[in-house]
Image 1: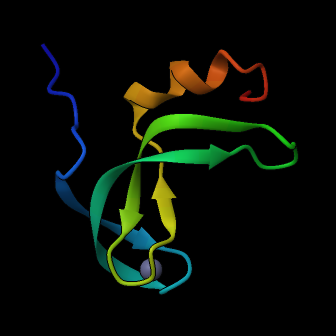
Image 2 (image 1 turned 60 degrees about the horizontal axis):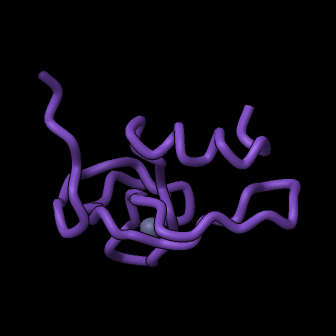
Length: 72
Ligand SMILES: [Zn+2]
């Protein structure tokens, strides 16, 4: 059984804005789908704690985005 992430969990990941490995925090946010005007509320994402940029979307959130039809 796979452990799921929860809001408030911390991790580390590479941030494109900071251009380095940063501490990240899982937060529930509204995600703007790139290239569309769609916004998906209440999605758990991984956020850079230094610049507040979303650095990744955990696998468990992807079905939620797929439901919008905008996620390929
Ligand atoms: Zn950053």
